[in-house]
Image (cartoon, rainbow, N blue to C red; front, side, top):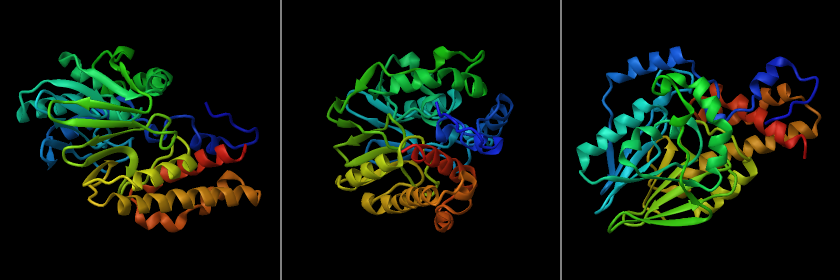
Length: 325
């Protein structure tokens, strides 16, 4: 929980709310219902980005807009014996749509559901896969992150769950990744890696060795402005490691497929570095958070979508962290 310094205005406190960054500006049940009705008519599109690797690319929308439950890139990988799902979307509706899409592509069972981190747009569809009795896999710190946020998810995203909304629908992993974990889908091996605190404190990547496809979760944002819920310095260090991995393609948590991972990471690195340096400079000069908000990383604005719904919270998050150092 973020501790606020006395004397900050209520407006700044609102910006710096202690919620997961990509779960900010929570939609009410009414807007969730509106989102469902608006999106229901749209087909659930899948792209086979490599043999047996299917991705549903999320929409470029803020989390408080109609359609907010369908903003993350989610999908699945088909092995000779079974299927691994990678993230399940931001609602039971999206989770069920993904499950139905899998059944149109293969008759093999879903044996594993992997969550790349805690945020609602990646985990609220988990319970849609309960009938398959899969193993739910995540970072070793994901259970604690789910526990911290479970009641918030149920209260603020009730419309994205089956009614009546319940904590039991927020499913945590039963198999944990401390550092690395190998999964065999039958003739297809997946390499999972748990990362130090970066975008969140529970980021996980999934590498399909057969096709050289890396699922980055929200360690990589493309087009959509990155949201900070972990530690910017840690995130920058993780990007250095990611850039050294040899892959054929990368599926980001948000945005388009990347065929050159190192190049795809560069815009995100530039923004995070500008964010970190700008807030450091503001604090060193004795500027308030509001003054930091007015100018930090502004040169990066033209490169990103959804700047206005994300950047102010990023500045507030980093300011709050750095001012106590």
